[in-house]
Amino acid sequence: MGSSFVGELATPFLALFAVFWVWRQVTGARPSSSSKSVAIVVLGDIGRSPRMLYHAQSFLSHGYTTHIVAYRGAALPKELTEASHVHLVYLPTPLAFVSALPRPLFLLLAPLKVLHATASLFWALAFRIEHAPAFMLVQNPPAIPTLPVVKFAAVLRGSKILIDWHNTGYSVLAMRLGTRHPVVKLAKWIETYWGRTAFAHLCVTEAMKTKLQTEAGIRGRAVVFHDRPPAHFHRLTSFDAHALFSRLDVISSPSLSSFFLPNSFSSTSTPFTTITSPTTADPLPTRPALLVSATSWTADEDFSILLAALSIYDEAVSALATKASGSTSKEQEIGGRAAAVKAERLPKVLVVITGKGAMKADFEAQVREKEKAGGWEHVRVRTAWLAIEDYPKLLGSADLGISLHASTSGADLPMKVVDMFGCGLPVCALDFPCISELVQDGVNGRVFRTAEDLADQLVSDGIASEQCPNLRDFQLLSASASD
Image (cartoon, rainbow, N blue to C red; front, side):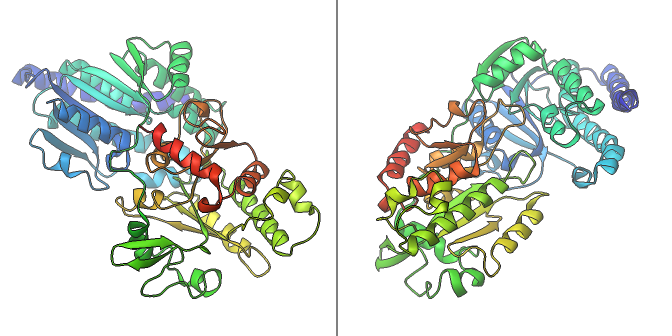
């Protein structure tokens, strides 16, 4: 399987190399237009890659002619689309259906997807960019076929390669096939062999830099470039939050208003806010707590932890509502600290999870089962796909952010937490080896390992911000952490 895969991967490279060499001999090398030119390569939707958009905007602001080589997708900022020095080089639509196939079909058709991406990317870098760029900045993952193709194109055009290491591609593949699978071993070799000789490496964490230096033996300069939230991410005023809540379908859903949020909508009110003047709105004292998360619905995020934590929370709220004396069994389950907040109102909880992905339908089925009669009474969960401009607004209006990112490599960080911090939103994040580079437990957020930990944090720290000085402190610290 491995040798066959290598052969299928190498054949198009050799053929394209031969064609390109003949063409260069006939026409002569096209000179670089300027030493200040770059091709930013994303084998994906760059509109959904804030980090690469940031790089593009940064190069543009420093006077670089910037070529964006990526798939067409979400709308790009006007700063890029309207700039005369930015050139969009869109790749043909990828064979995305292959990734969603069952494992046997995936292994059978994966080489076809690789060949398609190889040909389209090489053609774009070698022929569709008029003048050779001084630099090629490539997002990794995916490493296959991105890194080998960029290496060939860079050698032929005299460009220097910069790799932005978001994660390792082979670790993502291992989530599906297992670390010992021969395809995963081959993918690791390809990624390290073709990646180590880049001119420079941008690493998303200190842990990533160390991992690449020790395991991959990368050459060239390696620097840590932590993610930063976009400049327009910020905390919303109650009035702006009211405007958002008034039009979001996920909040005005009939399944919520009929029982969970009865009589909560009017011309001046939402379940969370009410208009108090033509230019102001106030939070409702009886509003539910709004929790948000974002995901691509992949195996490295275990949302069963969230569902279990919400079940514990729901039972704890019911126990407190009965005003039972002493500690209930559920209070003991979440660490015995629920008794300390009996005097406080534990609100209903609405969780909104944004994103698309293959595992979304299964999760929604689990939620429907939880919400059946006799299930959750104080908790509701809804999924949504938001317009790109509404995503930061939702974060800027919520009470708490949840991250279940586990990191396939143990060396990358969740961009969603960076976004939440940029919006002044406190965060509870799943623990993994390098999460402390972003979230410090008890300082700018909370870190949990189990569903019981998360439920304990929801109850003991509280999730209605006006009742909870702890989370208000986190809110202020998270805003300063993004500066």
